[in-house]
Image (cartoon, rainbow, N blue to C red; front, top):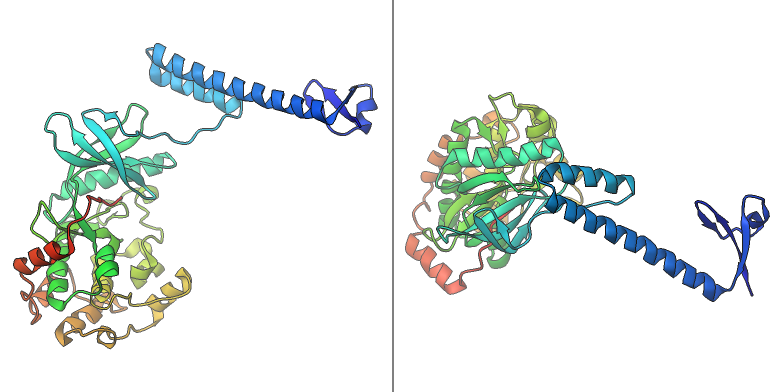
Length: 389
C-alpha cells in the first residue's frame, strides 16, 4: 500500500488527486516512510525554534542595548509565529531581594517570599502577572503607590516599588503571618460578638484613614482583611488589596481606576456600585463592612444566588434577613450591621467615624481581650506566612 503525497514549495498535501497537476510532483511512499517524514519535519521545526531562542538569549546578553535587543528578537519571534507568555522572576535575585518561594497568586500578581540582602529581613514581593497593557501596569503601580501613601497601622505596609530589568512591575511589602477573615471563619466558624467587634473596629479605622485621603476601597470582603498571629498583637487587622481603589477627588483616568466600571466582589457589593459605579463614595465601603460583619457573625453572606446576576439583584431589591436568625447576635450589633446594609446610602452610618462610634457603643465591645486572642492562637496554632495578592 502506498499514499500519494503532493509536494509544493510551501509544504505537502495528502490530497492524492492534486498530486497529478503540473504544479505538483507525485511521490509514492509507504505509511512507515510517511510517518518518518512527519517526525523529521517536526524535529526540524523544533530545532529551528530552539536555535531561534538560543540566538535570542545570546544576543540579549551580548548586546549592550539589551532592551533594544529584546524588542528586536521579540519582533523576529512574532513574525515567525513564536509566542511568549509574560515572564516573571522565579526564585533567585531581584535587585536587593533574594526570592525564595512562591506563596500566593491572583489575577493581578504573583507573590514570593523574599529576603533583603542587607537587612536580612523577610518580606513579600508582589510581581505583576498576566497582560502588561499600559492601563494594567499603571493600575498595578498605582495600587502600590496609594497603599504606601496611607501609612496606617491597619493597612499592609509597602517598603519598595519598581520594575525588573524585563520591565515587570513589582512592590515589596511586609510578610504577614495569620489568616484572612475568609479563612478564619471557613476553618473555625463564626466569631463571638466581642471578637467580631474587635476586628471591625480596626477595619473601620483603616477605612477612616483611606477615606480621609479621598480613597474608596471598593472591594471590602473577608478575603481582603487579614488577622495577624505573630509580629503584631494577636488579632491585629491588616486591610489588603487596594487594586480597585477609587480616588474620589483626583479625577483619575477611568481606564486605570475603573471608576466608571462595575468592579468588586458580587457577594459584598453595594447597590450603588451596581447601578452607578462612577458615583460611589465612602458609604459603599460601609456597606461592605456590613456584609463582612454579617459573615463574621453567621458564617454566611447577606445574600446568596445561583450566579452573580441573581446576587446583584438581591443587593438591589431584597431586604437582608436578620443575622440573629442564623446565630446568636446581640441586638445592638445586629442593628449596626443592618444599618450598614441599608439600600439607600443616606440611611447608613455617614462615614467610618460614625461606624466606629456605633461599634464602640455595643455592649460586647471589650469582651474580647488580647489574652483571649493569645490563648486562641496558641490553641489553634500559627500558620505559614501567606500574604494575599
